[in-house]
Image 1 (cartoon, rainbow, N blue to C red):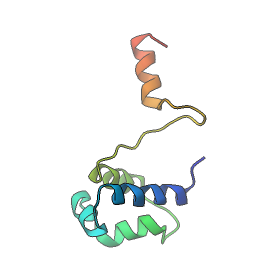
Image 2 (image 1 turned 30 degrees about the vertical axis):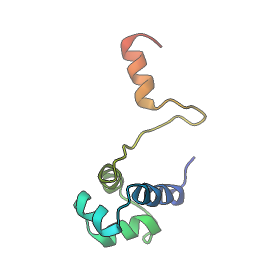
Image 3 (image 1 turned 180 degrees about the vertical axis):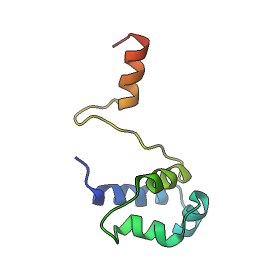
Length: 86
């Protein structure tokens, strides 16, 4: 399982890949720069999923769930089941 530390590192990487400062990402997501910093450093030892989703979207990413040990996302599996091709 991915730890919160891993998620914070992924967030930092997403921001870096998007070539955004903490302030620029915060502005795009509608949060404060200190919120971005707190999420990237786990300053409070926890993170808000809703803020994480907003920050990732602002950096051009989607949050996807992937079953451990699999390449396909939960969304892929559900779509296959809906279309009857599972």
